[in-house]
Image (tube, rainbow, N blue to C red; front, side):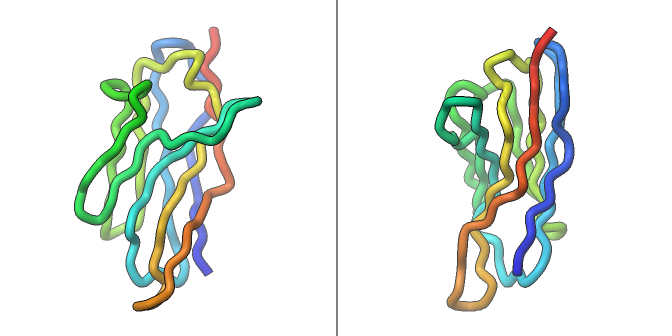
Length: 120
């Protein structure tokens, strides 16, 4: 079994910053990619940012220049530094990872979600 445990999130004023962290643990053979999705009320879940084992990084256009994703391969963690937050960034944020649990078996895993609310 693999678990993704998130920390961070909370209430912040517009223009403020928050940092989300996610740690993967359990039967991990190799992590393919780690990243963050978000889902606002009434909207579909969307990719915010992700990074693969080779270091390639993707951001959704709406967060480019404001959010930074970083990954620690040795610790199996991924973080999301969120600056210049806007009310439209309000959502539940979910850690996501594609992980090999053996040489031939892989699956997609999700964290439990952490709420980010941007409001004055």
